[in-house]
Image (cartoon, rainbow, N blue to C red; front, side, top):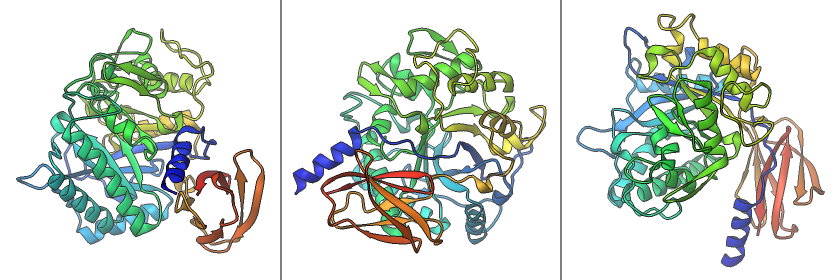
Length: 432
């Protein structure tokens, strides 16, 4: 039975996935602090175009680099939890970002790993976050040997195991998949083309091990300097070419001295940029260049510079954009107008002014894989039809969801891969 289950799980990883109906994501980091140049904003007052809000940050408690805490600065914990819920009631996702540039996190052994898992699980459950964002920088992740597929460094192995356990804890508690995003700096990802050691390429084993759980990778295309593209040429931050070259690199994949990094699907990749000039030390890109780069990547505009996409027609399913930060986007003292980044996103992806109607994937199938029954979890208990197809696209069941957790008997199904379609969304599951 175990051999059969492993075979099915391998098939899930290797088979091409039907395109999911996912709304473009505008991800923004929200400051849990107040500074004059980028003032504090009440969480549930964030511009409606941001549909994924990264709360910055959960950080290690004093005296540790692994025991995490999050303390709202301007409101009580209970009031903050209510603000999270208010955003979620609008169809938006709120996740907790871990680390940041000034708070190293280092999981050096299994004791620290387990403490990290326990503390992050408590934070997620108390505030009701939809998931986590990994923003480990500096010494938090580093490579001393091994390969992308087989890391040897304790920090990396323990981080991978910790995230898997946090996601499992979330599933057990909430009965649905937790959102996972990552915001590495370019040196930790595309930098692997230059070297595989220290910080160079250090995120690649983490991305590779968690690729099937990852919702969005949005590399920080700022504070970067120059980087190689997969064409062997060097590109400079702050340009349309840099955006295009760095983005295609993580989609197409590239070779490193630690092995081949297999790319991610375009719908798991977003472009991460500063909201305005003062938001980063370097890498700010004017709105016209950002739009030109994104239009080219999406396959709806001409080449904006010298870099030529490997894939003709671009990547129409590119997931969206990320910015540091919402607070910097809200002020007009370092750009021509407030929420200039959100406005540019709207122009590029053509979304409406309110993302209350724009939701991320909101159906889930669990357990997965399953032996005798599955549950289809939805955000609505209206009598909506669902359909189950086999791998050849043949419909083998149709029914209606009568509740937000619809039980479906699959004991008569043959072992293999199936697809559930509901509200124009398609999810894959395995029967064993």
